[in-house]
Amino acid sequence: MKYLIEIATSDFLTTKSAVEGGADRIELCANLAEGGTTPSYAHIKKCREAFDIALFPIIRPRGGDFLYTKDEFEIMKNDIKLCKELGCEGIVIGLLNMDGTIDMTRTSELIELAYPLEVTFHRAFDRCKDPFVALEELIEIGCQRILTSGQQPSVGSQESVVNSKAVDLIAELNKKADDRIIIMPGSGVRKDNIKMLAEKTGCIEFHSSLRGKAKSRMQFIHHSFANSEESYSNNEISPDEVRALRNALL
Image (tube, rainbow, N blue to C red; front, side, top):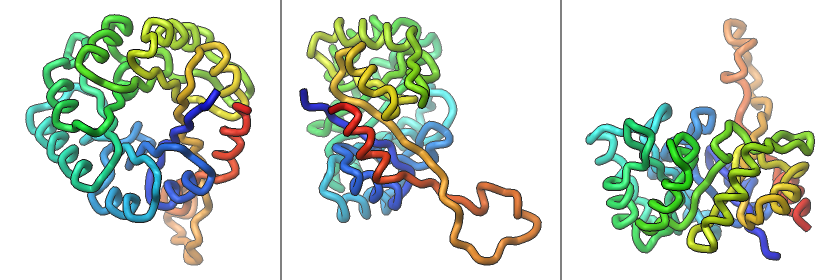
């Protein structure tokens, strides 16, 4: 069985580490602490120039919910055009209506605009009212992939424990999908549980951020911010952790 590992990265350096570790695809983000927002044009361009790997920037103009204004939707469309110009392989989107259904009209428009780029519908899916209705709707409008934690905050933990509610739903979604769309588990996917997730769900693509923190190399620490982690630590991904994630599937 050939599995695919997608790593969510937050900047150029974490992307570099994920590539070095053997990731198959990058979900390129900014602000992962907010669930990921659209990276800058320069960020995407630099990664495209530096790395021969599938890049899927997230198209999300802000953190928070997935109910977007007309102005925010225009921003999303322009960001998609830039991703096409830069030669990305795909994009990641997620739009909902006020009632918890998929925003079919605008999602369809973005999928058409993105073509021939692939489109992943992100974990906005986990906030929708009926995942099985949403599954069929996303198939209908030509979405290639759904990133999901089974409508739970996480699919599991680092202690080889999986969230049974999440895993059961993902397995059922994957069965219903029947190769018409890819179901990709994410959030809480770690080396300790990825093999179990693969066996229980039948999924072959997996998403993880493997987020860590590295101490800043700053020599001067201002006393007023000495206890501020934000000021003196940076996001980090260990290439070894990416390798370990893949090796756990062997």
